Image 1 (cartoon, rainbow, N blue to C red):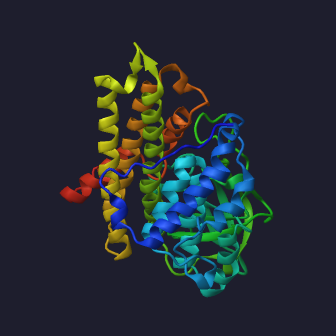
Image 2: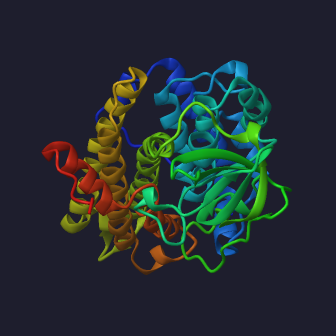
Image 3: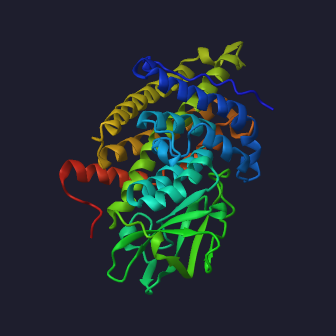
Length: 393
C-alpha cells in the first residue's frame, strides 16, 4: 500500500491569508484524507465501488453542510472553510468530493434556504451527521445545459402531489435516503420537492460502465405516480433561480476542489522528476521537465488567488453567479491541463494505479462537464460582460 507523501504547494505564501481556524480545518481534512482515503481509493476506483465507510468520516470533518448553522447540525463555518475542505477531499478523489458537494450544496443548502423550519429540523441534522444521504434531481435525459426545459411534472391531487418523470446522471442516487427534486407544476413553474426512499413508484437504478468518477455512485431517479406529501414542497423559493442558486454553491466548492487535484498531480510529478534518473541524472534537471513544472505551479498559484478572493466575496455575500462560473471553468480546465502534463512527466507508469494522476485525469473529464459545461461557463462570462445571452434561442 503506497504511502501518501503529499506536500501542498504554496508558492505565494497564501497561508498568510488564512486564519488559524482555516488552517486547522484544512489540516484536519488533509490528515483524514491521508489516513482514510488515500490507502483505499485506488482499489475503490479500479473496482468502481463507492467506499461507504467514508461517510461518517466526511461528516466528522465537517464536509456535510460546513456552513449550515449549528442549530441545524452544521458546523457554522464560513465559505473559505467550506472551500478548503472541498480542496482537501478532492485532492484525495473527485468522486468523494462529489458526494460531499451534493450533500452540502445541492441537498442541505436548498432545505436550509428554501425550506421551512419543520423541514430544516426534520432533515438537516440527519444529513449533517451522515445518517441521511441525499441527492439532487435536476438533469434529465433530454435536458442538461437547458434546465428550463425539464419535463418532470407534479400535479396537485388535493391531499398530496403526484410526481412523474425521470432524472439522469444523479450522484448518490443509488443509496440516497432523500432526493431534492425539481419539477414543474401545471402552470410550468419549477418547484423543489423532497422525495424519500420508500415512496411507492420511486426507484433509483444505478449507472454502470463509467470510466470517470468510478468511486462515486451515479444513477437515475424514476418517478412513476409518486405520491409526495404536500409538506415536502420547498415553500420559500421557486422558478429556475432556485436550483441555479444551489448550483452556485456547488460550483464554488468545485472551484476549490479542482485546485486539490492540481496540487496532487503537481506534487506527484515534482517528486517523481527528482527521483527518476535518465541519462545519468534526475529528469528534473532537464529544461522541458522544468518548463512543465514551472507552468503547473504558476497556474495553480493563479487559481489559488482567484478562488481565495472568491471566498472572501462569498463571505461578504457579494460573489455573483458569473464570478463563481468563471472560477469553476478556469480551475477545472487548469487542473485537467496540469494532470495531463504531470502524466507525461511520469511517462508510461503514469497511466497505472500506482499513481493518482490518471485517476484524477479521468475524473476531471466529468467535473469539466457537470455543474455547467466548460463551454456554457464561457458563455455565462460572455453574457455577463456583453449583456447578451448567446445561448437563448
